[in-house]
Length: 395
Image 1 (spheres, rainbow, N blue to C red):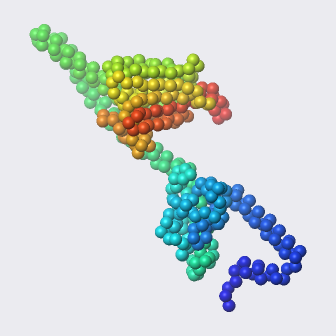
Image 2 (image 1 turned 30 degrees about the vertical axis):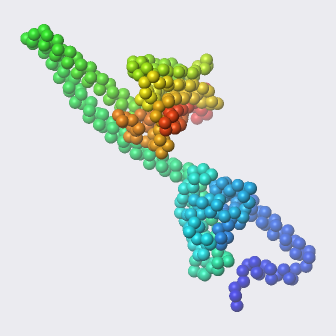
Image 3 (image 1 turned 90 degrees about the horizontal axis):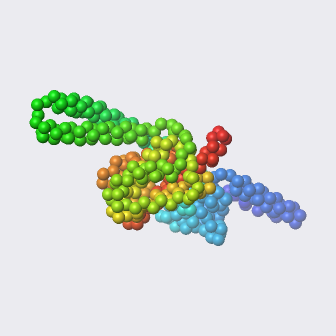
């Protein structure tokens, strides 16, 4: 005798019901359906029910949100059309129908309606894995869990560990370079003093003294670079003080005045009358602008402009550094903050990584918009001074 489904059992009893009882049963079923839909709509996981052809016959609110299912498409829409990345993970791009439902557990990345990571759990609706399921009944239920934040946290942790390792290595190399430089500097000073008592003629002595002076200056310059490099890659806990961003920008421009003049670069500084005040570490914020403005200068040719715009956006002070240089290729924009990635021939690939780290430690943001062949906009967002005060008071 063929096995009866739960629905067959219910239908079999309908013949025994009178009109009143039937009406009560219909109302009860409607209430239970409404209750179940309400429960499904408030849970955090997305739920999709597909028939044997991959048509979505039911979806809860979270399910529709995760796959970007538009109301105007209706509920009877193909999963392959609504969410091709998800459909492909279930093998629906290769099969016209779900011929043999099976349990599917995997993580996938979808790009629509936005980039996110989903944990997919799909199971047959009818039968078990050991039973033969007819083509007619071979639907599946798909449960979707959004694991984007979880994935992002893991990736961020891995990236932080990677950056820390690289910085430790770079600091070790810088330290090793510093020792011989100190030794060279000492020997140069000894030679310099020896010249005072040597019997060289005046002309030769002058030449040697000039060469020694140049060597000593270069050694000191390299030593200064290493000191600043070590401070930059191993930033201490920010020493927060009231800072005026306009003052810092003008100081950095003054430091780069000779280079700006030699390349005939024109700086257009657009700042409102309102003072752009933040709380931050002076040396670290200087480092941010030194790196970003330096990159803009490297990106452009002679007789070009760099535009710096300071504006207020709700709780942030925004500073945009705009150049009309070569720009960055689309596939490389996301790599800019990675250690040792550079688009410059003589770049070391740590400048923007340092900028990103300092901005994050200050509760700020850094973003890059670039179009290859047109130029680049670097946007720095700093929490306003009063906003940071409120945040610290709440803590």
